Length: 223
Image (cartoon, rainbow, N blue to C red; front, side):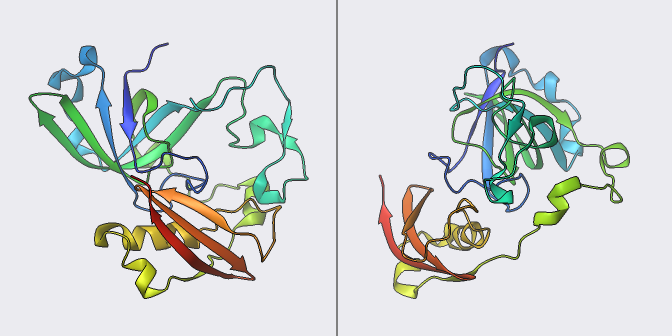
C-alpha cells in the first residue's frame, strides 16, 4: 500500500500528542497525492461531521513482533496483549483516528483539502484511507472498554503564568492549556523536580508537575 496523502499538524515531536483522537479540538489539514485529488472522489463527504482516518506510525521503526506491550497508562510495568491495546508498536504500524470534519476545501493548486480537528498525529503523517463515520453503526455507548475503563484520569490543574501565556499566539493559548491538562508525562514517572517540555505549534512549553498541579516554567519559540 502507498499513502494517499499526508496530514499537517502542529506536532513535530511525539511527546505531548494526545493519547487518543478527539480529546482536544486540535486542527490538521489532510492534503492528498496528485492522483487522488479529483473532486469526484470526495462527492458527498461534506455531508458528514466526522471521518475515520487510517494512517501510519511512520516515525517508529521496530523489528520483530512482541506479543505484549506495557501501556504507559498502567504505570509502565503491567504487560497486556498488543491486540488489547492501542500501542503504536504493532505488527503493522497502522493508526486509526476518528476526527471531526470541519471543512472540505477545493483549491486550484492542491486539489481537495480536508480540514479536521481532534488530531493525534505528528506533522506529515502518511494517510492511507479516509472513511465516513456513521453513528448508527460506529457508535456503541454501552460498550465495555476492558482495562481502559480503569485508567480514566482526572485532568491536571494547569498554572500558566500570564507573562508566559502571552508568549504564545492568542489562537493557540486555550489549546495549549488543554494539552497540558491531559498530563503528557509517562505515568511511570513521578518526579516533582523533573522538568518536561512539550513542542507545540512552534513553541517549547516547559513545565513541572507536583501532585495534580502542572506549572509552566518557560516558553521558548522554536522557529
